[in-house]
Length: 374
Image (cartoon, rainbow, N blue to C red; front, side, top):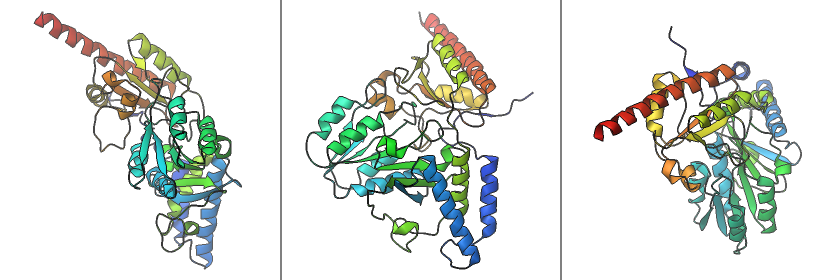
């Protein structure tokens, strides 16, 4: 009997939840523009604002924060980084998503990168030195790393950034649904989210920012989203986003922990193991089996995993994040397994069985070649 495909790539995109699909269908049935003043337009507007409140509540932002809906996490990060105009330099952690790295380099300001410790956490001593070199900084540090699951000490970072007169932007895209997010407790000036990481639709995100901050529009036009992001709102997508945040519940995963223990017994190294990590992401390496060969083996067995960020044009290449952690020797051998709302303990077990058999075969072939050459 052929087994059904097993999806363990939720960090790339989490399949849409049935409740989200239903919420989107109800929104599509309205069939009106939220900027229209007639009855159906007002109904769409009400749905939009209810969704705004739901997403703000998800990060404890009702009251102290404002929200602009975007087309996803990349646009939210772009809108945040565009606020760096008026600052003197940009400081970005070496582990940030490409959408932050490339945005930082597009505004003509000096950009410096904060290194990572071997654990995957931002090097706080190095960050302090950068903050103390003068010039008002715009700083971007992610909450949960999308490749390793490592959690950065954002509260501590926020205190340092604000003492230097700076703005702290936090990419919380990968944190959503894995850990609790409280924008006020974190001390973030802005924070980005994406619906598709928590079982919502692709193509919808949000930039949430402190009510004490003013932001400038990246897309001027008709005045939608309080003038900060023009264009007719994606009401169905936004309704799906709101339903996804209502359903998202952080939880520990005992099966993931058991799998990691078994992987280590087979000779694997769990990346970021010495740091605090969010549940749902296991990144591991072995010294002698490339990520590309691992992916081929898993894919042929019907198991969907990845070698790192999904936003790299589908290429299998060395992980920039692992290289920033000083793990150059295994940066091309890392596999990322990420769980979500569809994942069961049996799924983790099936992954482990398939991977371990593949690794055993790989080692046997390698030993055979070595013996023959000797």
